[in-house]
Image (cartoon, rainbow, N blue to C red; front, side, top):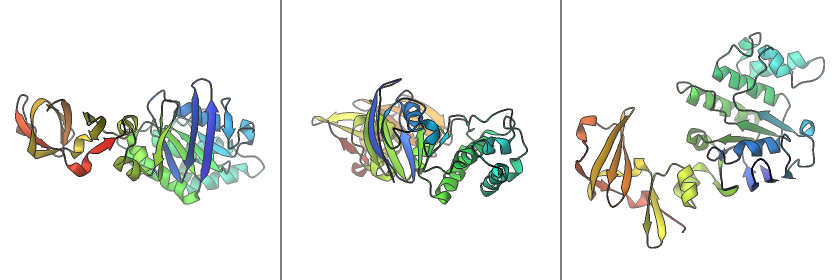
Length: 295
């Protein structure tokens, strides 16, 4: 576990304190300061804090994997990984690292002529080559196509876990957040909540936290705010609602409804013909799925 406490003034004001436990996701919206925080930890932006706040970038025991992998296009995959190493055995060490990650066959390929998923694994090998105490990953899903994203992310996380290196992944992607061992929510220049993904999903501490975690429906009740995710609302005996819109979402249906306020409902494996605009339906809000938030 690594305790982080950092304060930035530029390019965005941040004052954050949180823990990195295993594979940790730093979840926040675009512009929240996730990338700035990772760069500050890597020593690439001026900041105050611990750990490593007094060290220059080249002395910090971190492996930094920037957004989009940022491989050197004029170097081979092997040379990209060896770039982080020193000594006569640097190429042999780089090759072993590629072999360990199951991508040794890419060694002679040009860094600019491999797929997004392959580039992510090469970038991971380059970051691991420094034998870091912490890995910093900036939007690791950004360069991945939808068809391979989940598989590549799972491989990436498994490779990190196998080495026992704590990792901090800055992301706005809920898919990464739900795969994490520990989840940290960043908003309004500070950490608004941290815990396991299950803990946070079951008990968001605020409206801002609930929105980051994918809750779409909010309503006031007795001076507080209640919320529920679209997939947790059930079609059945309950409150009368009017269908205002129907959109297919793969094999699912996303309904825009109106009860006393607009409501979004996700119907798993729903039949498009079962719902039409203007139709009256019954919606049930299971009590164990409704969360009551602090005012």
